[in-house]
Length: 264
Picture 1 (cartoon, rainbow, N blue to C red):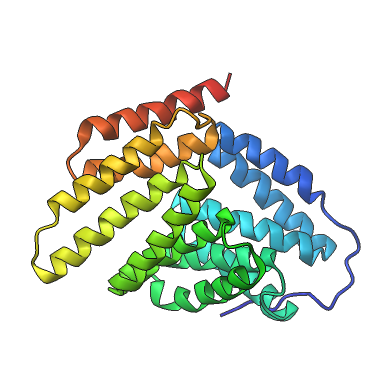
Picture 2: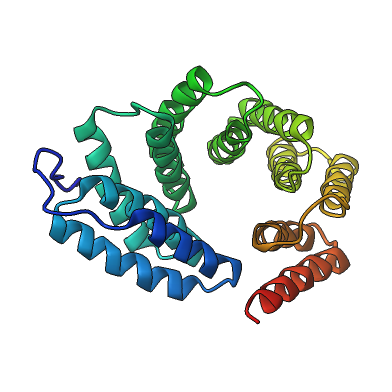
């Protein structure tokens, strides 16, 4: 059940949201997820004490993604519920930023086996993104990638495939985005799931998709920063799932080395 928000109340103060975001970004670069969790939970309580609904919504959005990464289902869904209550009080996706929070909510719901409920929030985000953003904006690729994973969970494979193809088109046209590898490995999972449901073979298509993903991760133009490490760690399990163990180990090692260097 959604918790009532305090949108109508005047705040008695505000939290330094940009400094908080900068701080947790530093922690993400070092893969210090527990540190980021402590910072966010502290400022969540401060925002609530001050009646700073705007700041609270930003904190909740960050928590939603973090709890998803940590696999903390209960806390993640509570944060989703609170964020959705505030957004509803505000009037829905009035801005691209609001749409991004809907997208975060939907993606965490999907991650915790609630894809059927998440779809409507993906669609709210999709409508705002597609009407407000340029067609080549990389944020559209993030939307299409995440929306496609939920569609795949619901066995809506053709729709999911079209979303992945849209994401790939956006990212390839922009250039220099390692996230295109995520699209390819996710598409490989979709191809596998669809083939399994039909009793068909798909080894050649999966091999081609994983080859494309790996080549994109080897792109010399990519900066090997915390985001690159995160993408490597996100793609690695797919290579292991399909039996490409050397590639899996290499990607895991790349991520570990980057995080190790960032902690120095």
